[in-house]
Length: 338
Image (cartoon, rainbow, N blue to C red; front, side, top):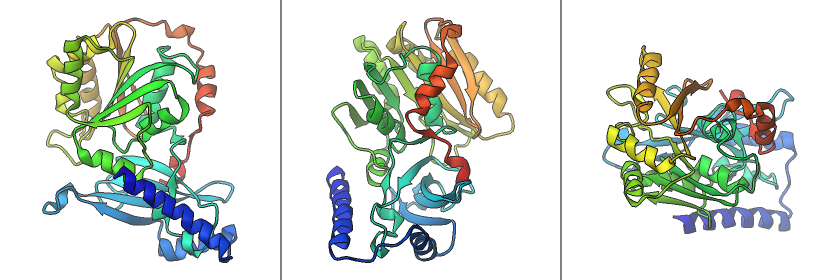
């Protein structure tokens, strides 16, 4: 699959170069927008780029690649790409990325399905941003792009967080584990993820992976858990899945992060008493770590951050952290898409 994605990207660049050499008419920004909106989006804000069904006999397993036009206050526009459980945004989304407009704007490049993903940009409201920020706001990681160590990702979604880390932190070893092969497939086909010398996705059971690490006495500087159901579970707890909430797993996780590491969980519960649900999960987790903190974002997700050493956060200069993160293109584009 990686080879086919690379060939697709090369073909896209070849088409652009060929267009230029053949003197195909280059469109102005306004002309290009008119063609993208009118022909590619059929004058709608959304378009379904693809339907991905791991089980062709079961439509309930299908996920949708949805591109959407966003508008900024200065009148400019851009396109975002969502992974959704239905062919629109009425039931939320599982992932979002910003696309890169083609350099050569012509009739041959108006199809957003061919546009590259800007893996070096992340929206500040997303769970990915909170998980990234937690490493620095808690003082566990130095504000330095040369920082070394290893991070383990349980659940890779579309690989956005791993891609972002790989772009800016070349000395971090990144290992993602996902039980669903479709996650790696979607990450590489539609969301710009690439394996690199310091970033690799493994297909397997993340809970078992951590428990095996604990048995071998291996540690990780951070374990970021974004293990979610793609479709509505009976108990309404989309994230985290039950396998990463068991006492056996939490004991192993505590051993793996040791006294210097941190773990952050993305949580999303869809029922009336979700706040009580978040607090209940936090209280259960607190039995296995020295401290656990509960936080949230503006999209309705909650986050548990646990460690085995009590860090005095008063020593962390939050304004400096914000400046450090801002320099890595943590943007606010999502609000212009919703």
